[in-house]
Each structure stands twice: as structure tokens, then as C-alpha cells.
Image 1 (cartoon, rainbow, N blue to C red):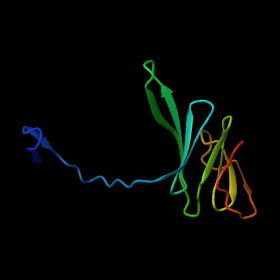
Image 2: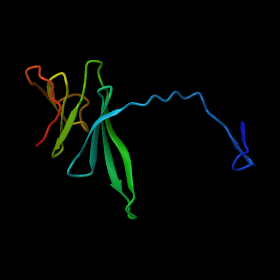
Image 3: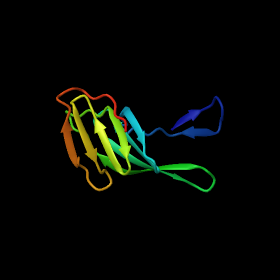
Image 4: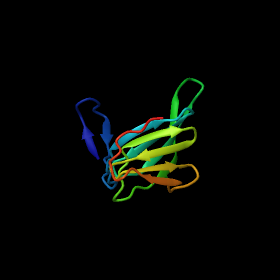
Length: 121
């Protein structure tokens, strides 16, 4: 325990150091027409979050799906089309996902090995 005397003289703090937290940067975000948020991480993984609104207007986020990244993957752009999610990256692949049912792409098309930096519908 560490004694803290500068603000609250009667407060003791216990520091836990057995959890190694490694931050993972977010590369891009895409909101669906409904209440879903898709994001890609620096390691190429995809996450889908549901944004639930409580009666008081507070928003609660909970993770619905997580697709693990690959060493050779890069997701630089995301866009929703109804319940389908499309991703693209510097490898030149454009992929269609149904992340709530499958943890792999439904279909992947090549952009002739040209990096894809953005998507729009």
C-alpha cells in the first residue's frame, strides 16, 4: 500500500501491477444507420459495438463481435451498407463482412493491388 498525504491524509492506494495493458490504436470508425459502431484496430482486427441508449439519454456501448486481425492485414476504411460491413486496406483487398454471424469475410475482391484508403456508398 502507498500512503497518499497530499490531498486526503487518510487514504491509502493499492497498485496492481500484474495486468499488462497494451493499447491498440484505432484506425477508422463507421456508424451504421441503426445503433452499431464498427472500428478497426492497428493490428487489423475488426470490432462491432452496439450503442444502446437508456431512458435518461445515457449511451452504453457493448461489444457484439470481434474479428481477430492477421499479421498481413490492414484495415484503413470501413463503411456500412444496411447490415453488411465493407472494409478495405493497403493490401488492396475490399472485403464484405457479416460480423455478427461470421468471423471471416463473406467475399473479398482485389483492387489490382492498389491500396484503398477510403470507402463511401
